[in-house]
Length: 263
Image 1 (cartoon, rainbow, N blue to C red):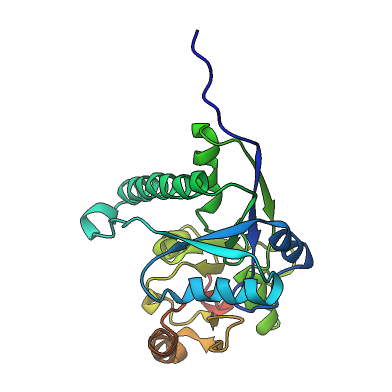
Image 2 (image 1 turned 90 degrees about the horizontal axis):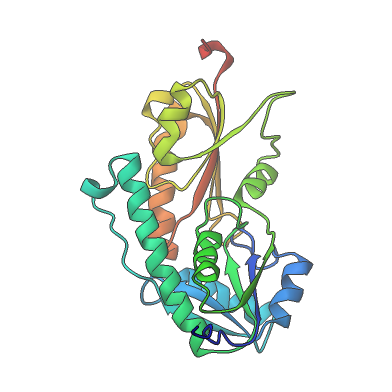
């Protein structure tokens, strides 16, 4: 009977929510975990990746001496032929998760110690990190103890900036992506928070009300609210400006159906 491979000493791997862009949005618990880690890792999506730079500045502010180790992010298939259908999109994302998990595993194998993974916003909202970490744990080549430290999500910051309650009295709120917005509206949702926006597919919702935020918490934070049909050109111009000025744009918005348009 063959012996089980030596997986090395058990290591703590902490997934830490760091907020939506403000250096001081991270919680005290999150800061304590960063300081207790031997190093942190982050995916690097290209030269001069501004989100990697943000993580370095976060560590310098709250956990000086903790090194950020960059891991080159595998290429992801974004072709329309592969991602146009829900099943095709899911397959592309799962393949990318597998490739990223192998890259992270290699980085962890080459450096001993307890590791923090700083995650934008909160790990529970449209983030792949937990699925990737689960793949590493399931393969069993490393003995890891995974812990999640919650963070302040972009949803919370959006609501705070616009002084919003995200649902009506006794009502519900649907959280979805820009890719699936039309689908949830067609199903009857009338109070929707939208994340992960490649574009703003809102032409058919001109009479709805929107509360929008771009790069929340960062120096370039921009807020817009109003009737969709009135503010949509400005929203698109703001997105273009943020990307040009800062090298990235992350936006989230709340849509609420006007009572006069409800069916």
